[in-house]
Image 1 (cartoon, rainbow, N blue to C red):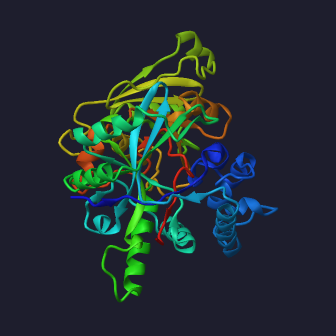
Image 2 (image 1 turned 60 degrees about the vertical axis):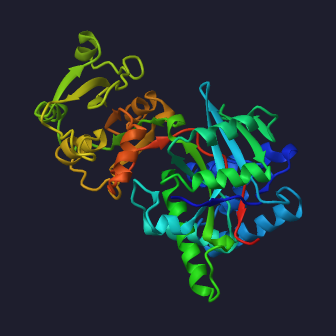
Image 3 (image 1 turned 120 degrees about the horizontal axis):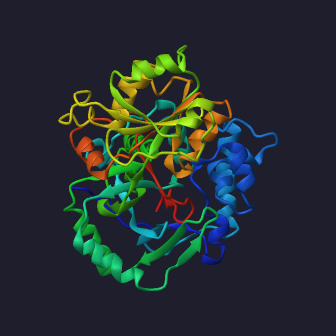
Length: 426
């Protein structure tokens, strides 16, 4: 069973929240962050390299030093203020008319070490190291991780009571997504939420594998340095927003490849026909004229084992033939596995999705037309769109101890950073 606790969040005054809140550090490059960051933006703390001209290496010591300096400055100026008592918080997000309600909590690092916080992706050491440095130098979790948990009716009932009242924060960001925030400060509700989660068997990392691993490493590091360690110290906990599984929706995570591995389009099609039913989606006239169809004939998969492919200005539907996958294998049945094995590896020669520079990944939030744009521009030669993984598949894989292939899941909306910060000091 998982352990959670309330915490006294460091957060912006309500009149400043829209100026302070920012998109997560890993969805913007440095140039985009500089263009987006206003005077009070948390990006000055999460991406401090933007404070230098020219922009410096985000992993350099001056950048880390600037992050610490800026965090202190935001506290001194009152742009961030710590709550007077430990609380839980409700953080809701609205996208396309659908709202999901998460609880902002502190999870225990030991639960990660013991496998009660379950992952579905591998992490890269260099990214873990970078996030660990940020937690260590700030002595705080500046940005939350994104968890799901099995639905619990009583937790939902408590949350429902709070969201019926006026939110502390309520705004629509520049991307059109709504962000809403309530404070759970009743001692009885805090006690009951803590008790209810002690009966929940596991958290599942939806987004933030590197931040989760880094927080656990910092906790273990601080534990080793404290001869009087008890397990209750603040450094044993890290900040997460936990959503009921039923409220989350995974969107597609697509692939674009720079070249056809030396093949002509005709040779590519011949190889694809061995494992797929390939259907041309445009008009025959377009096919003969090689008219660039772009978004006009764009096709988005509507079921498992169906893919769309864009090459040479033409959209195709690919349906994996029976016997080319194993429905009883939780990893082998995934469309990312089928595409990786039968197309990216066997035909296009991409052996390692993590390191091969010929492939890139496009979140479904950008729309199917983004795939056509990147191919039509000449930057890429071919694109594939996939049907999204379900929450059930994610949970089944995490429960079985398996790991999904890289770049399998994409969750939207992303958590806004700056609504709450967890200090590792009381």
